[in-house]
Amino acid sequence: MKILTTVKEVREYVKEARMQGKTVGLVPTMGYLHEGHGSLVKKSVEECDVTVVSIFVNPTQFAPNEDFDAYPRDLEHDVKLLTECGADVVFHPEASEMYFPDATTTIVPDVLSKNLCGKSRPIHFGGVCTVVGKLFNIVTPDKAFFGQKDAQQLAIIKRMVRDLNFGVEIVGCPIIREEDGLAKSSRNTYLNPDERQAALCLSQSVKLGKEMAQAGEKNTKVILDAMIAHIEKEPLAKIDYVQSVDAITMQDVEEITGETLFAMAVYIGKTRLIDNFIV
Ligand code: PAF
Image (cartoon, rainbow, N blue to C red; front, side, top):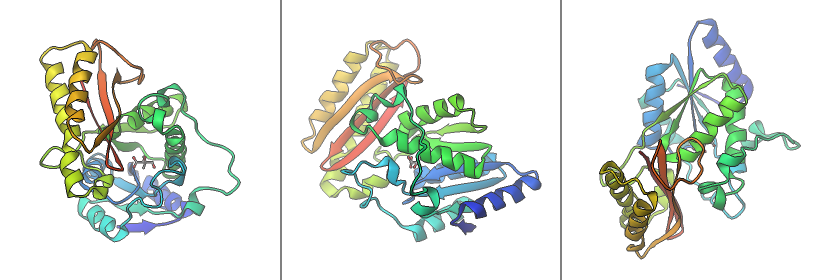
């Protein structure tokens, strides 16, 4: 597996692959990889001839009060996992390689980014779209793979690709969970043992909500109230939001009539965790 650090090297690598008639898959990540990322890489390896994984903790998607500096990094571990998963290239640029100091052009997602996580992280999705758009232009992948755990990010990126005519197919992949149900996340590493136990209230409320919906409950308030009541039983948990939205438009819905996303962000101590399900 090659480790490349410059845009020029990646472009040359991809050009060579294309000359050999190969298809290219991209898995954008911020590193500190776990089995969730591994599942995206394996899917790309299955579906594309060449898989490029970017590892870049993107500064523009963190607000000044967020965990950019503390965000966990372990390139050695990541390289090992990616080699095992069959990735061909790691693109690991410095911030100065990705951003010109006097850059003035960004991608600003509109209405889809105003709800859910966008309410408490107003600059987040602009940073995500800008860096993902740049990665699409650098790697020019045929397919790009994203986790359903970041359901709003996935919806926003799909919309960006449609709106701006990026020539890439976006593939959403299922949430990967620990044995006890906790959704895998690089941020789980922040949790102390008590918080790790408390964090189960997210996946438990997902399970509860999903069962209610599958049993035929159509009123989302009834489902959300039960999910919220479950989370509120956990003293270490503080809800940022628990909401039901249309899975495409990210707008609130009160009745399940089409694909509906139930999504939540919950602080466990200082760690903000997300989880969701779609019915
Ligand atoms: O989901 C992530 O890890 C990041 O938001 C992404 C898509 C790699 C952009 O920095």
